[in-house]
Image (tube, rainbow, N blue to C red; front, side, top):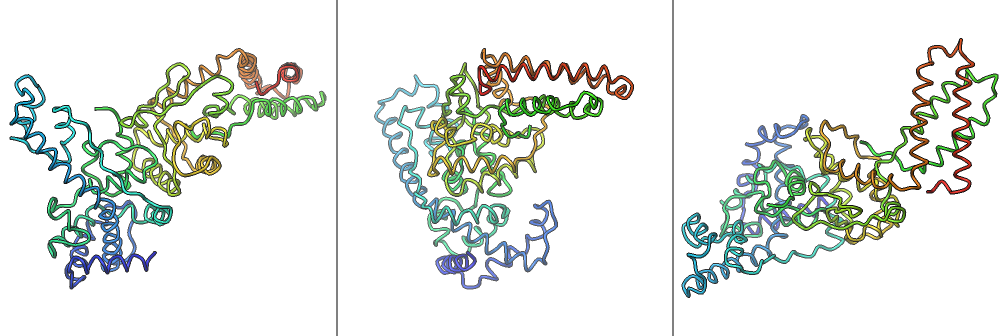
Length: 477
């Protein structure tokens, strides 16, 4: 990877006619190192000289990568904007469209002082003149490049934006054409976060908001990707899902084996079992369980809707499309880590990942979610990705109930309203009552062993009844 970087950087410097790397690039980066240090929460080891070399090399490598991604797309967009401007001009001059009868056209002409069409506003012009929407073709990315980009997302993704901007402008000042600047120099002398968009659009597992409303002020690449995901809206730590019957039978077997002359000593164990039964609640049943047992169906949201637009309508659950490729695991983990470290009030992406990790337990779940989960990974790889991520997600404690939590509660409400769930919910409530009763008399266990024996006997009867129910109807119901 390091050799590849040096090879790429040598080509960039040659194409941009940079004869003195230290004078043109390194010294300018060195001047902003004190500012760059303040961008990080932790103290950066190494002197300014050492850090300047690291940032200069990684920054040049990233700029070349963004240029490679944007090169063809930018050229196509430039040609389209030129064509669109001429089309609008012809429509106005030929009077094929009545400007006085339109609300949007005069507004646009007044706002932009004529026919001023750019990448940021071309959609408004398309809509005003009822023209078909143009979407530039994204470049194809093979497995080898995706593999290399896992390293990029691990290390280079947090190279500060200020470093990239400084290097970009240094290259432009030294040459009017080159690998990193040939197309851009004619249109943009300044480096903006919009350069991240195509790269993020290709590699993001979730849909991004439009470039027009994407963040325009960011500190680094990962921040741009994160906010482009969570702002894609129209203009509790998870527990392993354990079947209820497993806990039931643990309790039944325990109660059967309690000698009555040792009932007082068994008090704390009984408390422990009841607590385990009362608390072992999954975030949500898996997708295949919801589908097979309750008839839930899963659909993908529109492209301009993201993690903040998750909703449920009856038994139809609408989730944002998740595109998973070989580099998605690293990207998702970085995005979640970024959100949990920098955001306090809401964690929409982390909550969404909680939901997906609860829904995807095995390969059957992946098949049920085929409308939502796309990409090159097979069902086994997708299942493994979510299973491994489940254990690494941080616990969530929110002051305000989020949309994701509302959807989870609604799904659980519908799922638990089934006739087959009535006995389980009854036993759950009874277990809560018994637990409360045992805690109340906890201070008198030593002197009131007969009362404790009576309560534990009730527990035994309850779980024996449950065992009989499971033998007849099956606990998987």
